[in-house]
Image 1 (tube, one colour):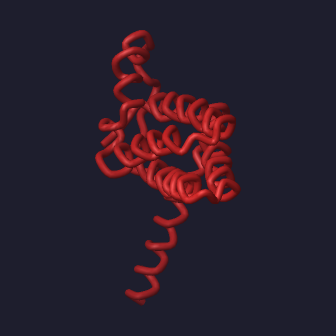
Image 2 (cartoon, rainbow, N blue to C red):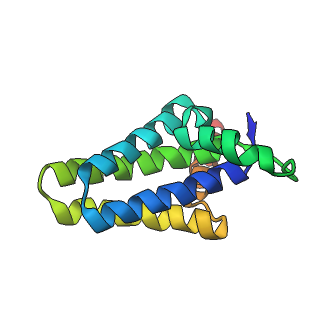
Image 3 (cartoon, rainbow, N blue to C red):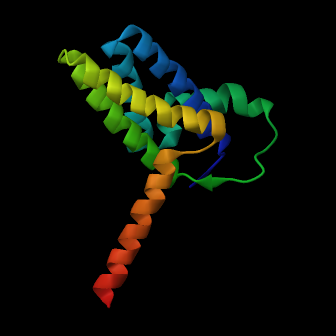
Length: 143
């Protein structure tokens, strides 16, 4: 499925704001809510994400059509990576291991900020590395 690449950047901007709020407040509940957002995007597809709905409803109608579209799979994989970091952070905050919760949140924030500010998606790059490694492994096994 092809998507408007501006949608994931919009989602990354909202994620950045949420994760900054988590770092400022130490709120496990807020990080749990962001974890749910990641889960919906990673497991259900980007169209199931609340941030995607906001983009499609409030932002996209006011923009010109995208110059190009992109494959949904890399940003969806990135949502999965965010899900792992947010889940670890949430569990750590709930367990009273604040340093680990804040570290996991900070790492997720760095990735979200890179995407929001510069259009550089770390999770998308990781997806491509995994894809290349799988392709090499299959080629090596076939030889």
